[in-house]
Length: 292
Length: 282
Image (cartoon, rainbow over all chains, first blue to last red; front, side, top):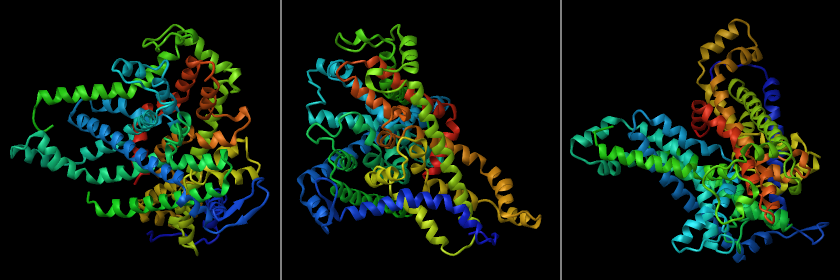
């Protein structure tokens, strides 16, 4: 809190006006519309809508398709989080050992952050292209017939790899910062007591890294759930047979392609609840419970 | 470094070199593909070394584009992306720095409510409320315009929080001195606050530029006229169109051009980039 303030009463509102107007028109109003539409159902021509109460939600609740999408989202988010965090941690530990080459390796590892998810999707789609890609060729030599157009597992692997690839640089930077903030004296003391590198990692480094790890867990789950739209749309478009139809893609697909506004709005509301929960977790749990 | 273990050092270097190679692999493959001619993709797998068509492919995409895919020249799309990225970055910084100033340096009724209104935008990513937001923008007649591309994305709680944090660390003595010298709030803002938050603004600008450049779903939905296609959204239309007639070398040249500006920003301004990334997540 500031002790010294200015006493104008009108000026602060003028300063806030642009932010508040944009927030109201493009955030609060559409969100309110989503809530309203989630209680309505439009007829086939989109001319009339009737109030249907919680029917859109009970329909979702009873829809095997929506549960499938929920399951796909969970598998996808968990795989992306584990893969990108695992690789990033390994690389961060290796860079943390370096003295002279830290900067060079960091530069070589951070740039994928700047690649758009959609472009990342296109790049990996090309590498895994069943007819001309190099990975299917190499996998073919090993006896695996890769085809993400027909195989559900291959399609899921493709979107997981593309999404995790882009997120490695972000996780790497935060893990490296976390590792470098651990006092060297702690590890030195353990080394003098005879603990080897592996033991030191599990008994000292990893526990002290827990705040970073928890923070990244939440951020990565949010990333996988909401920011990977471009990856999905540029590669599998939710297919084959809904195998990669994550929730945020389904909102778009049902709303724009399927023209089922009521159902799409109900899904929006469910997703808003999820973001709300994740934000609360991020602010309350991560910031307070874990000591730095 | 705790103790000298040459074996472990070697292992660390090996891990890193392998990591760098895996991270760079897709871009290398895309680059190689973008330097070959159309016929090189007919026979089996993609080549692993660059071909002779680099200048030809890139100048073709920048100047003319692929007319069959209905996308404009890549040069036009990159220009649109640049406008969008700059408007989002500058717009976000401008409105958040003003509202943070209002929230920190003034006491007025409903201050808490105003703050919560801004805070709540943190919980509403555009993908989640995409259908109603699209309807609002359509009703306002902003489809196919630069305003429609950027304005709906410039409200940001993160940037407001960042500036609030920065302002709270600025000592009260400065404000007092300014007031004693007879400076009004706007003079104080312009001559003291803004210069003091210069590096924060620069760091945030780097992050927001990348954010704006990489937008995908929003430009895809609200641009139906090819004059306003952005490159990240346009590349998908191009990839779709070439599905029947594989022009991979051109698609990959476009992909390379689409990632060039943001990657150059990250590598060229690495220190600011890391600062911005760490600060926006606090």
